Length: 151
Length: 151
DNA sequence: GACCTAGGTTGGATTTCCCAACGTAGCAGC
DNA sequence: GCTGCTACGTTGGGAAATCCAACCTAGGTC
Image (cartoon, rainbow over all chains, first blue to last red; front, side, top):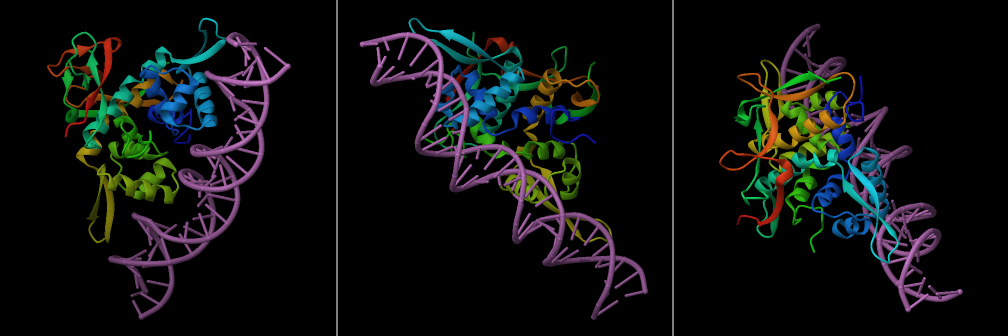
């Protein structure tokens, strides 16, 4: 029996959480979505310890979620920045799911929460389950099936 | 400045993760979605330590994600079970997001992964961003806005 | 060549997690 | 009414993850 956690788990949820489930990791991804890219920015926004941040960024780069790039501002030396890859940007559903759930189920009486909008029209965007041909599915009528991993 | 993690964080993602981001918590929620309800079932499926499970279940009940119920089978004594509340079931987007991401981005060459389907038609269900009037939004054209928490 | 800054590394305290052993309430059998 | 059995935990001690402050380093400025 494979362990319930770990990169070889039978369950894609467990495999995701093996990488993303450690403390801070999803908050780093959130910061990357918000446009922060630098070690010092992650540190300032999150208040995370430097050694933990180093380790998390390395794991995310290693897993292909983020990419470590060199960049250089005029007359400055080369620096590093960490940006989401296409794989990392696919986490928008997870991030949006957490944002939506927290907003609706763990409210606070003041302050603001992130909300997704259509960039063109400004309309509010919410998560939904849809079929391949675009029909929306009532979450109450949703079932789960175990499907063989392609390949 | 409120801490980036913690129940009073400015960000609904951080508030969600303050509860859900500890090790095992989302896997317990997953098991609950799969229909498991009992202490011993969680323990057997996950291999989680008993003390950690006790603590996680207490937090989830306290936060209104799960409900602790008494039940009694014929000629047996009263037992407890833990079932998702409406608030807990709203985590389907987060769980489905993790499942979909892991399936697509952390593949494995054997075994199965959970996939959501329409219970009536059997059609595959995927996550999408939609507007209130049901129009689907291309994730590439998605923006984020900070919106005041209602009330 | 002295200083500054971004991006780390290192050592040690604290917190969380793991594991095995034990506690306990109710019921069954005798 | 006592012995066991089983589900649901609690407790104690060790291992691992996290936190924090101090330090390091390379390239560029002055």
